[in-house]
Length: 272
Image (tube, rainbow, N blue to C red; front, side, top):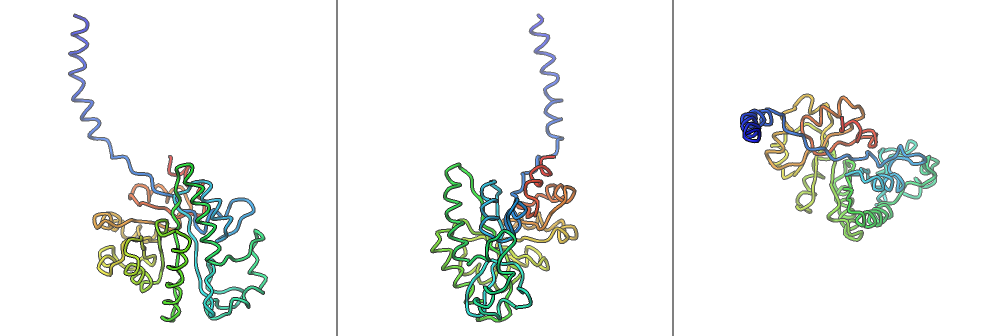
C-alpha cells in the first residue's frame, strides 16, 4: 500500500515538474573565446607574435587573432598598426622597417613574417590535435587603398595558407569590405567576417559575405542583428570585450565568438 501511495504522489508531481522545466530559460551556448592579437598578456609575450599565438593555442582558446600588413615591396608581416615609428608600412620597404627600434618587440621577438608565423601556427595546431583540441586562426587583413596592392596581398595570403596547410583553420576578418567580398569569392568554403559594423547581416549576405564580427557597441545599438544573422546561417563574433558585465550581455545575446584581451578571465566571466 505504501508503494502505491508513493507512486500516486509521484504521478501527481510529474506534471508540475514538467511545467517547471518548460518554464526555464533555454541554456545559452558558451561562446568561443578568441585571444585578441594572441594571448599577449601572458608573461613575457607581446601582441601579434609567434609566442602570443602559441600561448593561445597552448591554453586551448577557441581562437587566436592576428593582423597582417604588406610593405611597399610586397612583404607580408604580422603587425597591427598601419604605421611603425612614423613610417606608413604599405609605403615603406621591408628592409627599412627592419632597422627601426620598434621592429623588435617587448618580448624580444622581431615582427614576424607571415610565412614564418603561419608555419609556427601549423606546427602548434598539429601538436594541439594530439590532445583533441582546436584553435581557429582569426586572420585580420588590414585595409589598403590601392587596389593593386590589395590584390597582391590577397594572392600572397592564399598562397601562404595553402603552403602551410591551414585552409581549414582560417577565419578571415577585415574592415575592408572589398577584401571581404573578394575573399568570399576566391575561398567560398572559408569563413569571412566583416568588422566595420555599418551593414546589417542581410546586407552583408547580399554581398556574398558569410559572417559578421562587430564591436559590442554595434550590438548594443542593434541587438536584433544577432538573431537576424543566425537566421541567415551566419556566424556572429563580437570584439573587443574586456569586462565581465559586457561578456554576460553578449552571452545572453547568443554570439558565437567573443574576442578579448583577457581570455583567461573571460572563461571565468562566462561561467557565472
